[in-house]
Length: 353
Image (cartoon, rainbow, N blue to C red):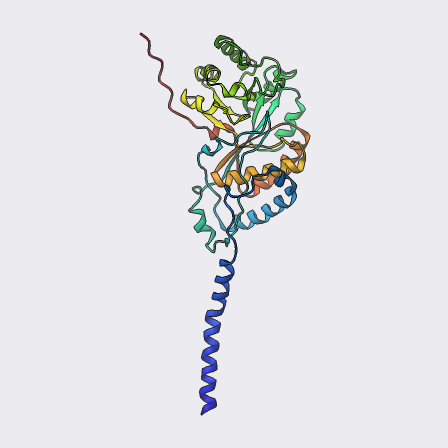
């Protein structure tokens, strides 16, 4: 009889352990994992991102591949966080803030990924706009860019050796064209012919802006080439952006200076506007460009959309050829800059006496 009751007790204890043991171990394991850092807490060093470029790209592909099987793609939201993400120099820099780790289908917070998505951007594919600056010197660059097979925005310098031919080729393909308007930098660098400078009168600024736009026929908007000095001057920018308002053009602030007032002045005048978040090739090496591209994707995932500026350097073109198809496979949607504009109400006309 004793052995009979002992057997029953052992069976009950075994059943209890079988029911409660794995759940307890799973809860302890999940609770012991650190949650992924959010962007504000992550390291901000671009050098660190560049050093780990290869590992970052491979890890991102594995993480996003798992997420794509179990999650809806992140959605779109306004690009307001671009303000304050200024470059370190002319045509240089990168958005401040680090990357956001993707927890995959089962996140480190112990919540299903679908639950965490409710805390982030609304559902929908994250959108990425790529702007290629400094065009107008070579037709061959366009062939490599068109082979990427995604919408791009092409920023053409107004007075380069092959500007007319480049513009004509882009117009034949109905590509989105910007006038890449040369402006005075703080560094003393040469922004090229036809540059707008701080010492110009309002009428000189106006006429120079009109001439540059006329040299890039078919342009639907303008972004600044260099311009860290001029873009910080509200009076000069009001004159320049007033021309855009009259012509129905939009403005992309390249953010070559933390003090740029371009976006603020544009929206105050009713000019549709946007700001870049990432410079892809301040460091023109393939690994560095790949790292900045991964950062761009993280920004787009976090905010719903993001804008990057790059140049037709061989390393940039090679990195884009490798990274763009991967990003598409992960669900990112490439769009032209015009799809990501803030479109303020038109400013009221001045009242006269």
